[in-house]
Each structure stands twice: as C-alpha cells, then as structure tokens.
Picture (cartoon, rainbow, N blue to C red):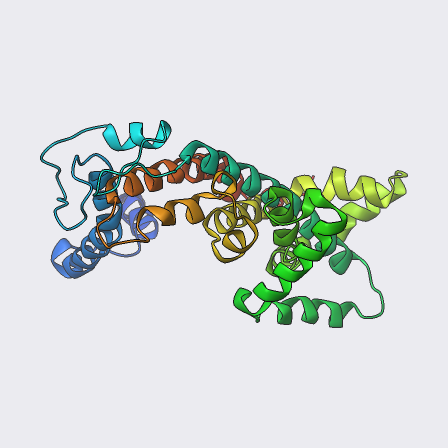
Length: 316
C-alpha cells in the first residue's frame, strides 16, 4: 500500500467511526415540538388535581367553591384541626372526626394486608410454577375468574359471614380491624398469584436443582433462593396491595361501624357527605397526609422495582 493510500485510509477512519457511533442525525426541535407540547399538556393535566389539593389544604377557607389554585391566606389550621379533632362545619358545630385513629387504622390494616397478601400470593405462585399436580391449570383459571366478580356482589355475604363468625369469635366479628384484614386476604390468591407466578417462571429451575443437590429442602429453596430473586415483583405486589387496601371503601364501611374504628376513606367521607362545600379544607389536608405513606413506600421500594435481580443469575 502506498503512502497516499495509507494517509487517505487513516483520515477516513475517524469519519467512519463517527458514522458508526452516530448512525442517525439528531432530531431537531422544529420536527418534534408537537411531542413536547403534548407532554407538557399531559403533565399539567396530571399535576393540576395534586396542586389543587395542596392549595386547598393550606387555604383558610373550607369552601371548595371559593378555593384558589394559589391561596390568598396560607394557614396550617386545617392540619391542626385534624390532629386535634377540632373539625367544625359551616354551622360552627364540632364534628367527631378522630383523624389520628383513622390514619393508624388504615396504616395497620394496609401494612398487615400487604405483607400477608404478598406471602400468601408467593406461596401459591411457587406451587403453581414449580410443581405439577392434578387440577393445576383449573386452579389457576379459577383464581382468575373469581376476580371478574365485583365487590358489590359479595358485600351482603361478607357481612353475614362476619356477623355469624363474630358470635363465636368476637375478636374477628363486626367492627373489628382483624375482620377487615381477614376479608381482604380472601382475594390474596387472585391477580397477585398470577403476577408472581409469571415472574417465578422466569427464574431458572437450575437454581432449584443446584440447591436440591446440596441438600436444601423445598422450604429452604423457596425462602433462600426464589424469594430473594423475586424481590422486584414482590415489591410491586406489596405496593399494589397497600394502595388498594388504603383506598378501599365498600367493605371497610360495611364492617367497621364505630367512628374511632373507621379507616381513612370511610372517616373522611363524613367531611363532605352532608353538603357540597362542607369542610373541604380539612378533607384536602387529610388527603395530603394520607398520600405521604404511599409516596414513602414507593421511594423505599423503587430500587427493587426498577432492578432485575435475576439478570445473570445463572452465569459464572
């Protein structure tokens, strides 16, 4: 090869490398401005309710009709009235609204339900994913079909069951938090089992076989091998169960009857049940406080949600 050919080849090498590194030219803003516009509009539509609730919670006026996006008089009175059970309506009459009790009841029920639902769903999903037995396919289809029926269909039956069981075991009867948790666990092996099973199917069975060769039992394989690798889907299931339980209204309002035993959705409904603009300020403040545990739980679980712990688990 001559020196001139070598020089031309050397000069063309960086250009070819740049072309390989950047095969397509960068899109210009004039070609994608409409995408940015759609994104901004969607973001504003999603954030407006949140901004309005935050504004109403700090607004001194409890009327929703006169509420503003930017409150003219910022105050913490709404939060103080909730925490000290000093909520007053438009007529000035004090309402029995023990918000701290409602908050603790909801947190206790949601945490226990989320934990038990995740464990029970994982146990069922492990059996359906790893074992082969008669009725396996029918059982999975049955769990899925049961979820097709809405809660309203079973409310009357659930009330009668809890009422009759409470006559024998008062601890899990009407107006008991334990009864609500047990009722919620009735749907633990539904969609959750399907979600976890799909993830268990992606975990290589070679890991189970290796642990079994080393003398591990089925329980040791489940708790020591499969469960740590399934942390992402378990975090998602726990978060979904926690949020669903925290927002559930129908069953909680049917079983819990005493004011101090109510959950957040059932108790806070009393603020706005009598008239359209009853006490929206405390209601907005209570909704804002109720959203904090969900945000905290999401931030705590996000490192498991966004990570794929099974990647590369059979390499090495």
